[in-house]
Length: 181
Length: 262
Image (cartoon, rainbow over all chains, first blue to last red):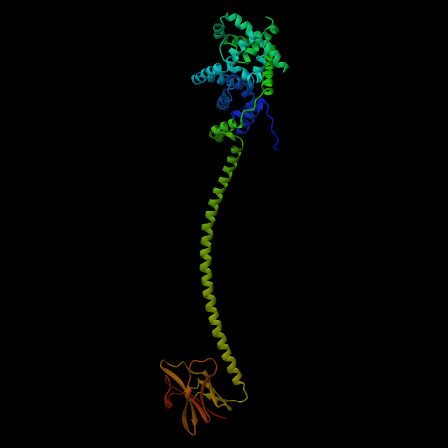
C-alpha cells in the first residue's frame, strides 16, 4: 500500500488552487462522505444525492479560487456549498413534482409516514430528531429546507423575534449535543 | 456587552450552519473582529461541526467519484501538474537548445569533413596511380636487371668465346663484342659503342664463313647481350648498318666494326 499523505487545510488550499488532481482526489476521499451525509439529509434520496454530490464537487473545483481562508474553515465553505446545492435541488420544479407524486402515493399506501424519517439515522438529522418538537421544526425548516427565518415566521405564524430566540436556543442545544458525540 | 452570553446564544452555530440572516451575520463579523474570544469561538464551532460531520460520514457510491473525475479530466490536465511540468519544460528547453547547437555544430563538421574526405580521396587516387606507375617501372627495372645479370653470367662463362670487334678505319670510335657459345654455337652481341642508327636503319651482324659473309641477325634494342643466330663455324664477325630488317648481303661501305675469331 502506498503511504497515504495527510494534508492540513493550509496545505490543501494552495494546492487545490494550483489545480492539483492528486490533492483534489485526496479532498474527495476525505470529505465526500461528510458532505454526502448532509446532502442525503436534505434531499432524502440517495440517487439524487449522488447527482448533488457530483455537482458540489464540480463547484468546489471551479470555485476554489473564491474560497477565503480568513472567513472560515474550508470544510464550512464546502458544507455550505453542499447544503445550498441540496436545497436548490429540493426547491427545483422537477423535484417538487416527483416529491408531490411520491408523497401522494405514500400517503395513500402508508397513511402517515413522512419521507424525512427515513434519513433520521444519518448525521445531523439524528441529533435534530432528538430535539424537542418546537426546536426541531425550526431546524428542519431552516437548515434542511432552506427557509429564511422570515419565511418560517410566516409558515409557523409566530413573530420573527420568537423564531430567532427559539432558533438560537435550538442551535445552542444542538451544539451541546454535537460536542458530546 | 457580555461576550460569553453572546457566544453561547447559538448565533455562531446559526452562522456556520448557514441559517443566520444577513443582519445576524454582519453583527457577528463586526463583533468577531473586535473580540478575539468570539473569533476563537467561531473557530471552535467550525472545528466541532467538521469533526462531527466527518465522524458521521456516509461513504458515497464509487461511481460518483469516477463521474466527477471524468467530467473534470480536461480541467486537470493543463494545470494539474503545476510543479513537475515547469521543471520538465525547463529541462526540455535546455535539452532542445543543446540539441539545436549540437545539430548546427554537427552540420558544420559534416561540411568540413566531407571536403576533407573529397580532398583525401583525390590524394589517395593520385597515390594509387603513382604507386602503379612506380610498380610498373620497378618491374621493368627488375626485368632489365635480370637480363643484365644473365648477360653477365654468360659473359663470364668459360665456354663463351669472346670476339672483340674494334672500329674499322674511319670508325675508330665504334666498338662491339661478340660472345660465341662454343658448345651451343649460339651467338650474342654486346653493342658497346655504336652510333644511334638513323631512322629506318638497323645494325646487322655478319659471320664470315670460308671468306663469305653469312647473316647472323639484326641487332634490336636489347638490354645487355642481344641473342643472334646460331653460327656453327666462322672465322670473323663484322657489323654493318643496313636497312631495317637487314639485307641479304652486307653493304661494305657501311661497315662499322669487325674482329677475327681467336
